[in-house]
Image 1 (cartoon, rainbow, N blue to C red):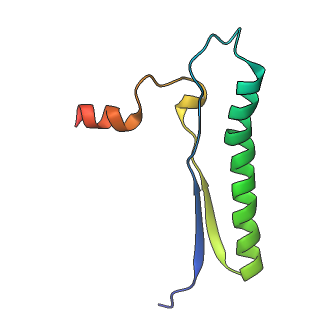
Image 2 (cartoon, one colour; image 1 turned 90 degrees about the horizontal axis):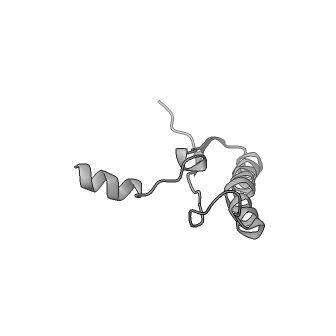
Length: 85
């Protein structure tokens, strides 16, 4: 078995600003959240893909979403895990 160089890019970052009423959520905060969560993911995947192509290596780009995009968590997953451990 011959080992080859490969790339792995994992995107798991996501932000949610303070929980606010969606009817009065400030546009500036929404734009910042979208810039990080959407544009940041795209630029990360593009950069990883460009490096894979540049060096002729195969690889994987893994994009991980969470329910926090549609439902704000009141307790972080780490705290929830520790609490239920």
